[in-house]
Length: 137
Image (cartoon, rainbow, N blue to C red; front, side, top):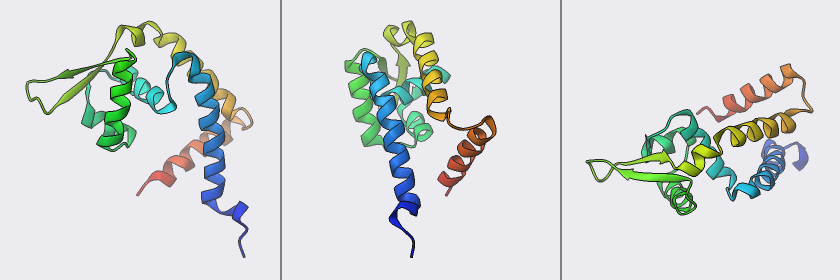
């Protein structure tokens, strides 16, 4: 009989708690949640995405994304622009996001490295690849 501690759901859940909690603490000075930080990262890679495209990239449903975007707009991180078709919402970075871009990206990279520091370079690459493979349908 398999022990609960060997069930993949348990293993991934506990790993997620550790990573999420660490990111959450490090994002406190910015007033961002980990999900909001991921939105910023996506917009740093490509700005002026539609809300639908942003949701697809981050694998978020529209209801969840809508709440995240509302809070980020209120916090001064993003600007929501309606296109000619009023059903389409484009998301762009606010000045606040642009000003802290380099520091924010550097700190995120450092945190990512810190979380993976227990692994060798090969193990890191393998872990990330395996987790991405696990997400595939």
